[in-house]
Amino acid sequence: MRRKQVLWEVYVRRFEDALDRYKKGRLTAEEAGELLGLSGRHFRRQCARYAEAGIDGLCDRRLGKASPRRAPQNELDRMHLLYREEYADFTVKHFHEELSKHHNYRLGYTTTRLSLQSAGLVKPATARGKHRKKRPRRPLPGMLLFQDGSPHRWIGALGHDLDLIVTLDDATSHITSAFLVEQEGTMSSFIGLRETIEAHGLFGALYTDRGSHYFYTPAAGGKVDKTHLTQVGRALAQLGIRHIPSYSPEARGRMERVFGTLQQRLPPELRRARARTIEAANAYLRETFVPAHNARFGKPAAEERQRLCRLHGCGVARGIVRAGGPASGARQLRELDGQVVTDP
Image 1 (cartoon, rainbow, N blue to C red):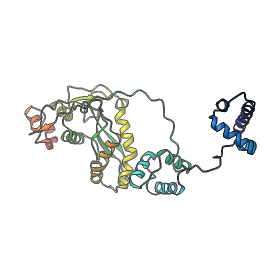
Image 2: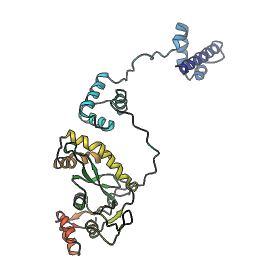
Image 3: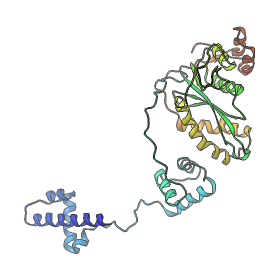
Image 4: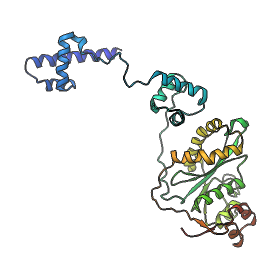
């Protein structure tokens, strides 16, 4: 308050000095106004108010009045009630998107966030640390895909954690496959590959962690043995897909950030959709959540061409068997039967 009072007194002295010089003809209205940061017209208006009401006439007449752009209180109250009763586990950004989509809500995100914070319903986010430089994306869809699983309490009604298996395109951040299983393993990896290849075609490389279903690692924490392939590794080799191991969580930063977003958004959406079983949750993922997520968070590729190889005809699984690949891996991929790889 002391600082505000001092600034006001300084402004009054500067105005009176400019007014005196203006009356004596030493300054024009435009020059006097420029000294005060005003237009010439507004300076003349201030002179008239000063002559009429003295120093009080210089006060901003908007002070003490509600802004005409102020958010309606009844709309803020409605928003607070919805948050308490239906969206208390949503992030503010996600909550605002759902309000705009389903509740005919027109107020902006910042207004919503500040109102929730002032009401004590959410806490201000902590400041983020200094951001490192992000790795450039691959220019074409299909050049590099990530696959990983994340254990989390995805369905609260079940009372235990499940693994969410996600396959993600590096170029666009589009999720090509996402589903819940009791535990990540060889079969879940093959399902993710099958769904991706059926929907989009073959891709160039797959980047994963060094889980035992992906790689054989002779020494814990050491390098993988690329001559001793797992079922997943042999199937990828037969399909001509390069398999790249990750040696740190930071190397999978893009995937880790996606899981952070999914852990914030998916559980509350499954709760609101009343998906209480793995089957119902996977149907919601496939039909609603993944398309909406890709539309919201997907990025345009740097180049429009595709790196994915489209499929036609008869038998990726049979092709693996004929080439001498493992029959067990072929059986895992048997649902791909009826398609064969051709050049794009």
